[in-house]
Length: 586
Image 1 (cartoon, rainbow, N blue to C red):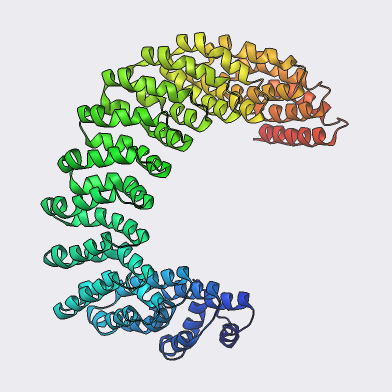
Image 2: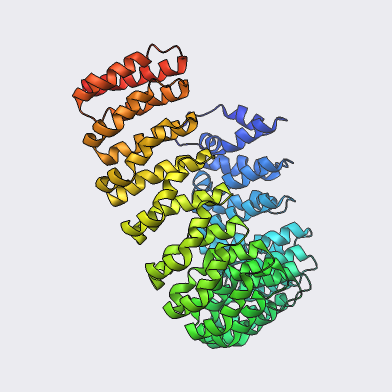
């Protein structure tokens, strides 16, 4: 939309551009429709511009999409809600075009306009338009009409309401699957506006027809309708009408429908309530977990924790856990990955004893899975298990596997472990960390992959923050500084990066006595990359150390680097000198 204070463009030019062969010019003109409308005034917009747009048979979808979008916010330019009905005509035309995204945008704009229209205008103009679209010769018009009923219905008088329900029923039995699909996907929205008495009769009979449709693409949209309708019905009606449908869908011959049930299962359980879930839906869910299609098992595995929360622990252990054990060794890595991403959440649901006996072995097998994604998903959720079984048991059972993963050949796995280390350290405590994980953190600083070295440097900083400067001074700083003599310049660069991250945590005293001398020595390095990184590190240290240290130590070093034969070294040294000048001035 053009802003209100935008200077008015020559209107004739913009209207000419609407007819121009160049698509970009037509698009620009559509985007400035509000400018044209403001210049014409409300009455001329209604009399001239809107009829022109209604007749504008542009064949380019991008232009039509922009037009459908603009018209949705056009009410102020035609004279407010009293004249909103003038906008229906061009949008009705757009509802019949072939391109789906244009039709969808036109329906969205019509819904927005219809929601603001006066009740009588809806009856006089909006509902007749919906009826025309629903009776359209082309299926595109009938598809679009399905998305408008929930706006039209509440304002209709009783006789018209009966007619609208009847028309919707006909759309649900249309010869074209696309129309039935649209009717199925919009049924929930329409049902929400229908009175309770008609909901049980008319809407439920429509719903039952859709659930038995011969096209799986229609049936799978009806699955979504199950959850929407379930929330509108009384609990007993829900159990009588919706539950049998869900159970049947879970055994549907089309895997896509079963996939949809698995994906929507938690919402479906919420719709029917906890008791029917325990008695009726547990067997259906177990079937989905053991489905012969991997996609269905993936969707079902991803919902295992949510589903267990609805059940009591005994039922979960009795029915769901055996399936979980099977899935942990599933032939599809994607199924195992989906399971690994949620299985840790089962620990709080099942309690300590069941977690130790039943879940820990599954965690361990997934931690040793050959695919990195499966292992990653387990690592990232360890804290959920820690809350249930305590750190001692966790360290005995899972830590050896974590140490093994820290040396995994896939660098992304090593990266995930590094990112998890500070959290693990805070859970394990200092003593345990020093024994088991300290050496690993140093080892990562010499990894062959840059991302690992970079993450390792950040990890060192986060550990110093977690355990404090004194601990870091004893356990981290000496080992980090020793590595500055590594023969490979890339590793020396990592140490410089680690020093720049550690300095703010360690404070000015340790920075001046321990870290700064190492950086100053590195300024004599034979590799230019190291020297310009020294300049960068010194720039980051200037605000941390005392002014006297900057004068005596930092600036002389930077002045020397500023005369380096290498152009990059000189550039970064001059930047650092400018930074130090600013600090001194301030």
